[in-house]
Length: 84
View (cartoon, helix red, strand yellow):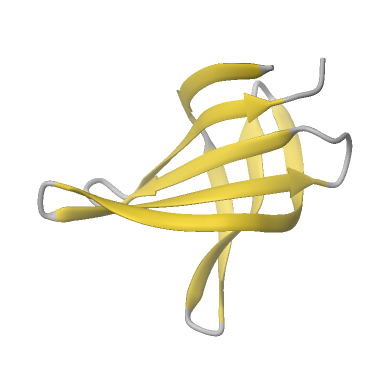
C-alpha cells in the first residue's frame, strides 16, 4: 500500500563522504531515526535540484520517501510504503 503524504517535515541530515543523508525526521509529532537509506535519486525543478531518499527507519518495516528541495532548502515526506 502506498500513502501519498506530501507534507513538510523537519530533518536532521549529515554529510557522509560529501553526500547528503537524512538521519532523523519528525512527522506528526513523532521522531523517526533512519536506519538505512535504500535508494537515492535526483531531478531538477527549474534551475534547482531535488534530492530524493528512500529510507527505512529503526522501528517497523515501512519505507519512507523524503525529498530535499534546494529551491527553498526544505524537506518533504512524499510517500509511505507499507505492507498493510
